[in-house]
Amino acid sequence: MEKLSWLLLLHSLPAKSGALRLSVWRQLKRLGAVPLKTSASVLPDRPDLYESFQWLGQRVREQGGNATLVRANDVDGVSDDDLKEMFQKARAVDYGEILEAARPLLPAKGKKAKATPEEIEKLAAQFQGVRQIDFFDCPKATEVERLLKQLGESPATAPSKPLALKNYQKRTWLTRPRPEVDRVGSAWLIQRFIDPQATFVFATAPTAYPEALPYDMVGVELGHQGDDCTFETLLKRFSLDDPGLKKIAAIIHDADLKDGRFGTHEGAGLLAIFRGWAQMNWSDHDILTRGFECFDALHRQLSTRTHKPSKTQ
Image 1: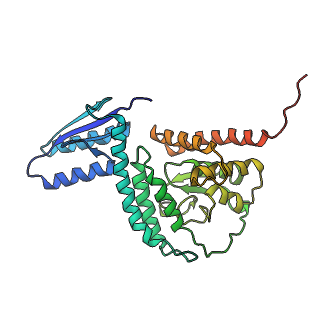
Image 2 (image 1 turned 180 degrees about the vertical axis):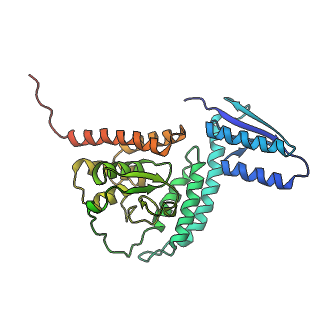
């Protein structure tokens, strides 16, 4: 296993500095840092986080305190696994707060959702804020995401009508940041089979780009519907009847919903790759670009593997 590198911000504040102490605490929480002993905070070693710690250390010194930024491959007395567990426990608390707020909004069986679009949007934005600092993929994130998708569904609605491709050309499509298997796969499906000149933008809520067409976001039309992931919804709504696409839909469904409906395993590898690219600080657009190559190859392989190879002389 590759050895991790860590950033430690060692700081001390003037005795009478309540406002500064609160401000520093808020900044550390916003960055996702976890406390290490009394006056040290730790983050994974990434260029953007290094700059953030530099800025915070400078601010502490300007206010009469002391701050030292250290990059370390080993933290004495604490293993990499211990540090990862500390981050996951911190994020579990954050996700727990979202679950506590979201559970009372779940609809009763067969009833329409209790939550208003504004409440769902607020919870979704809060979730994305925590997801941005969830450096080691806390398992509780999946529980929150599934619950938020439930909030955005309405069991009492009628079956969705098919959509005409001609009405969805040269559009800007919006989805959440840090795209993973369903969002990357859906973007690939959109550009390859629905809207060849599609462009993509990223935000935590549809209101950020009012003119864009949102997909795979809580409470939007082109998202999870019933037991379907977004990729499956797009296939059905646009009447795409391609055997290779249906096989990809099964892979994405199992990876995204983790219910084992189709018994596939390829999606776990794709999910790990996309999350790894995010942890390498790749941009959302870079993840889409490289992810499209993965799905191009997967579609080609799944579309041809049932054909018998020609006999060689």
